[in-house]
Length: 475
Image 1 (cartoon, rainbow, N blue to C red):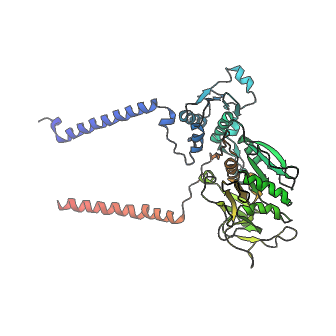
Image 2 (image 1 turned 90 degrees about the vertical axis):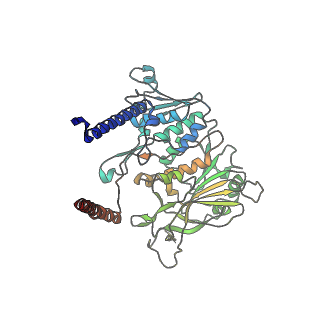
Image 3 (image 1 turned 120 degrees about the horizontal axis):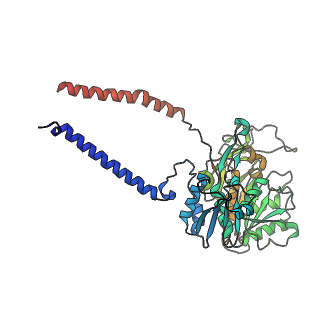
């Protein structure tokens, strides 16, 4: 008997052979995986799915009926890696999408044609139209934390920008949004205007006093914070438009004079505008109850915003409550907590106190509502859809520049829902933060895990060792 015939040597040989087989299998798997495209062999493990595309984008790509070329103004090995990986997802999701990379230092014609674009930007082109997506809009700067940290963070808006561009170049007639004027309405802020332009919308103003009807090409009517009341005739124009299947978005705001005729439009759709400004007793920003942090309710309109985990801040909101209206179905989009209350401002528009006092109505109030009418076109039965938002401050530039919020994402989701037509697809995809969010562990969880790590695991090891030692001693 030789030393190689021992049991230990045989076990060692078997182990070595098994290890060699496992290593060979792993090498083969890696070789095969390396031959697959990035869209297949790379898994997106980021918390906010930076390298993935949403179902909304997949739906747009699935419905494409014409070829789209997406040209990146950079060699592939020098383009932004995140952008390259997302573009691979687009190309894999539809055979109508072709991604190309052009080096502007070599292709002088392209460099001259798109000299105003940042290197690495994307040109999206179909047989009908083209749209350029600058790299700076794909990675927009976020200055929210600059004054507190001295640092500028960046977001990734690649999917939102690219999908919007695809929808634009493949659309037929673009949707048209009319904004009402003539009653002291607030002008849309620059941030909202930019987002509306990104949604491929044509815009125009409409003075109801000079109109005999809502224009036929109006896909959606936007009424932003009127300060003087409508006439019965003007309110009737809006209701007639709704009865014919129209779409209306209303943003309310406090007005010194009563808006009886205007509020009758909301009333016809099951929405009562209560007197007073909403104060939040439980869910507000810092120590200001008038800065209400709204609670998103689950719906098709709010789902994208809910997934982005951003706050909805609604300062100076009016209090909506719902009531039954014939042939009207209402869906709550944003609400307060049950601890909210209403306060009426004084004659000068100010409050003596923001704290709750005796006589202040308390309860849950609606901050945004979708009201849908029946399909019947009878005179007394309202059709169409109306979205009412109880505070025009939702889209105010000062609010949205000062806080990291989902306000504009919510507003644009409403616009996309209301303004889409058969030939124009509206998309509303929130940008994704590139910042690393700190992991916050509740104190109770900390105590539990500390107990497990410091006491339970060492004790379990000690007991197991003691049992094994006792068994061996008996042998």
